Structures are given as C-alpha cells and as structure tokens.
Length: 243
Image 1 (tube, rainbow, N blue to C red):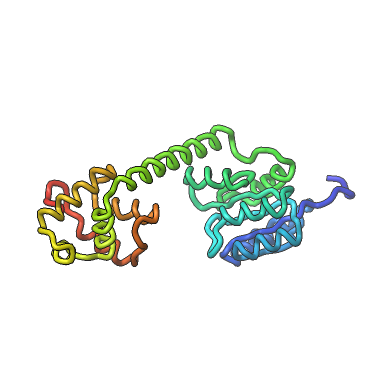
Image 2: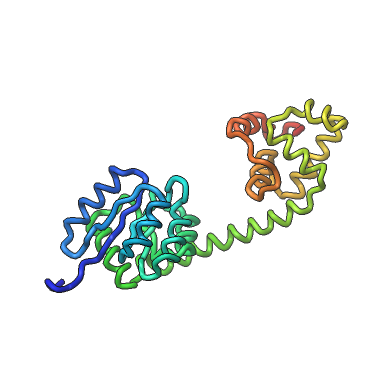
C-alpha cells in the first residue's frame, strides 16, 4: 500500500464491548485500516453508518434490540457502498444464508485470527467474495428448504378449525386436559381426538411441536417460557397415551 492510498474505514458493532474494543485495537494496528467507530447495538450501528459512511462494517449477528440481520439491511439501505461482514459464533448454515440474503458481503467466525479478519475486510472492500461459493450455495439452499417448510406449515395451520386453534391456545397456556375439557364442555376422549387431529394436520409428533409452529406463524399468543417447559415435561413418552 502506497503512502497516498486512502485507508479503509471500518465500524465494529458487537454487543460485547470488550470484544468489540479488542478487535478494534488489533485491527487498528493495520496500516491500511482505520477504525472510525465502535458500537454495541444495531440501532447505533445503523445510525453511525448513515452518518460516517464507512467502507466496511464488522457486525455481530446476535445484537440486542435490532439484530444483526435487520441491521445489515438498514446499513445497506443507508450506505450501499458499505460492505457488511457478519460475525458469528457458530457454523449455522441457516444463519449464514440469512446473512447473505440480508445483503452481507459474507460471514466470518468470531474465533478467526486477526490477520484473517483484516484480510477479509480488505477483500470485502474490494468487492471480492469472502466465503467459498460452495459454502454460500449450501447456506442459501438450506435457507430455501426452511422457507419452503415454513410455507408448508403455514398452509397446514390454515386447515385447523377454530376449535382446534382454541385448543392449541389453551394448551400453550399450560392448561391441563381436565381444565380444557371442562372449559370447552367436551369429554377427555373428544379432547384427545381433537389433539390427535391437530398433530395429524400439522404433520408433527407432539403438542409442543404443534404449539411452537402455531406461535412461529402467529396463530396463537406467545406464552411464558416456563409454560413451554411445563408442556415439554408433560409430553407423553412414545407408546403412551396422549391427552
């Protein structure tokens, strides 16, 4: 790099400030990189990029409030010339696929060596791919399969009757079979038939799976986590009778 070449400006966004500042300190030692800001949440990161227009953003996937994916979309909307590198702590193909779809130049492990991360910043600034094409393709294929599955589940949920959705809601609230039967004025046997029909229509194997699907597609109200735990504890073992 020649003395007159401009430095690559960089924003680092991670909710763990100590980690973000450590990365900033290490990358700041690179002669061609300039750290212009360190932020700890998605809102601040997007606002900083809109104001400073950096060349590259290192963005944590798991951010409080506005997550890394939505932040990436906002950054790309505010500054199309800014390349976004998503930092992740896992090898989750689904997360990687979502990162690419959110406009990120690529994804990189948080455990990567500093020299590898610095080189990734340079490549992103030059518009070069950060990840092998087969890795990106696998991540996008996985995302496509999940979206197709979710679309299928949305259609399956449409097949449920109002009474079946009511039963799912009551189950999600941690209500016992006795309580549900009493409220609906039906026998335990009739309730059991309704539950079996729900599982069959949704193509799932447990009440918990059915409730999670209904919550994900906003067909029942979200319940407290402890209620889900209670429901999981109450799931029948294979071969036992499901109420």
